[in-house]
Image (cartoon, rainbow, N blue to C red):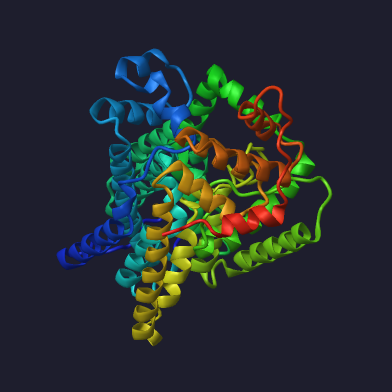
Amino acid sequence: MSPLAPGAATPVAPPDRRETARALAVLLGAVGLAYANAFDAAFQFDDYAVIVDNPAVHSLSAWWASMPGIRPLLKFSYALNWVLAPQAGAFHAVNIGLHALNALLLWALARHWLAQLAPRRDAAFGALACAALFAVHPAATEAVTYASGRSIALCATCYLAALLADAHGRARGRHLLSDLGAPLLFAAALAVRETALTLPLALLLPAWCATRRVQPDWRRCRGHLLVLAAAALAALATPGYQRFFAASLDARALPQQLSGQLAAHAYLATQPLLGRVGMIDPDLGATAAPSATTLLTALVLAGVLVLAWHARGRRPWLAFGIFWYLLQLAPSNSLLPRLDLANDRHLYLALPGPALIVAVLLADPRWRRAGSAALCALLLALGLATVRRNADYRSEITLWQANVAASPGGARGWTNLGYAWRRSGDLDAARRAYRCALGADPAYTQAVLNLAALTTPDAALPPALAPAECAAWAGGFDRP
């Protein structure tokens, strides 16, 4: 079979009623079961700054008065949600609905991808497997169960819808959908979160991976490039974005950023991507001097890139999965510094890449029964991990207990746990958590200030607790 030229319409037969009904049942059922306990989650951490204590999203008129500002469509969704139902459960219901919609969009999009990238595989099974793995993966919980994680989930909705509009429009000859609808959806994605800027590259990625000889046809995304240029001009003229990027560039120097991002990629690939979630605030450090771990990560990353490059044309589904994963992480985990080196929620839009690779492997007709059994086992394991992680969000205390249990050496995690205990009225536990924070980092200013606020003025600050004692205490926290 000759490779398709970039930009060519992908010959994908529309799903019949049975396939569509099966996808709806499986994906909506999977999301419903995996996130049934997420409705009881509380507002957490950044939720207070961006939603609960932010008057600009407490009415539509207040939202309008706050414009122009950063992420206008995201803030509009918060304002509309607050006007209709300000309870935490209502925000979680919207996020879960967005996640279910994203799983369905990914299923429809994966059918187009597989026809081009793996034409000898069972596209119906592979697309459903890809979307189901995405639907129940615990790394998605931070974008779904964390209310302010909506910035990722809503951006993904517009992003995937834009790609699907382009693929469907070109495959069916509906140029209005591909040439106008897709760029407008891209504009919506950028209005939710600026990391959507990767979409023009994602648009060309399947065709580029399917052939080794033909260069991408940039004419295909002229409308998207115009939208991107307009968005860049709007960002430069918006004071909020000026402050945002200025603060980002001041966060750390380039050597520390590169070293820190190697640590971040190692964490993301070996922890949440493999289903091992438990930290909303990973304790990752950025140092200028490379360590053995960062050097090893750099070598592994280089090897993965070489593998993906050589897989183009030969195993395009493998090249696509790898490049998609790295492309989606590039805005948050590359050269532009952020306060946090890594967060699980940034894997949300990157997950379809690895999920597609696994789905193609399982969809091989030579071991179809074994592939189906392996998929069921994998979905069960990931779904149970998601249910367990959702339970951590039932209160601020349980969320930060999970964080310090997974990373007892992080001063900020202990400080946030102490603050959660202080808000609940348990001052003794709060003092002990602050002392653990100082045991992890004696110079952590926020822990010193918080502990001083709970100490009488004429008394000396209690001493820091030994890290081993704190780790033993964290290991005894109850988790569902």
